[in-house]
Image (tube, rainbow, N blue to C red; front, top):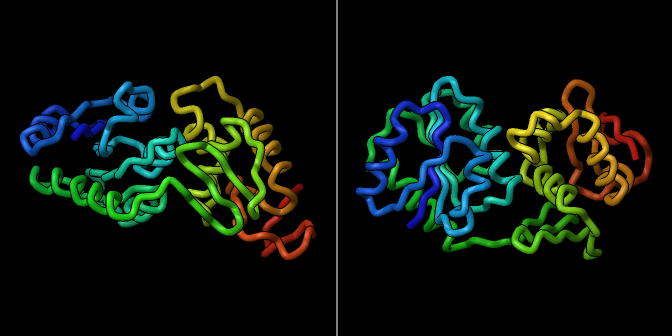
Amino acid sequence: MILLLIDQGSSAGDVLAQRLASSGFLPHVCDSTAEAAASPLRESATALLLDQGLEAPDAAVAIAQLRAAGMAQPLVALSARDDWRERVAALDAGADDFVVKPARSAAAAARPRAAIRRHAGGRSDRLAVGDIALDLRARCAWQSGRPLALTRNEFRLLRLFALAPEGFLSKNQIADALWPGDRTISGNAVEVLVARLRQKLGTGRILTARGLGYGMDMEPPASDGPERDGWRSTG
């Protein structure tokens, strides 16, 4: 089984790769989420293992980048930081499991195998939240059964919101997730993309919270009024 090992600041990536190989995996080490997303093995990989060092960004950021890039394989995060808040954020961002290091090599290999078995038993390429449904493989979306005509980046943004339906994302988080490693993307580009998606979904679906960023109300609004549940939304 091919396993993409994304090594973000870990000092033992090669050692872990050797131990995974001895457990039956074919590990391929990537130094960043951008490298993993561009890897020729991204489609054939059975699972993803994110290995976070002490100085690496929060695991949730990297996981959101991988999910936004369309990588739907089982994902296990290893982190040198024992922080319950990071653990919750990583799971909410799309991780299937979270392991605090140091971990025995047997456990590091067993967790991806368990995640693979869970996906094999109930994996679906469909994601439904509220009245919005997405086909992650075909990159199609529907709202109340009506097909949505979305560009590639509009679909990726919708998928990003759907994977974190109760959270708000800043412009920087959206830019990092949709265009990992590209420092030329401006906040204005994110605003334009959000405005285009907002127009296609209708009034009240994409919310704007000052100081937090953008979020999505996945349930159809009861009315088209400008205020909803205390958040300011614009159409």
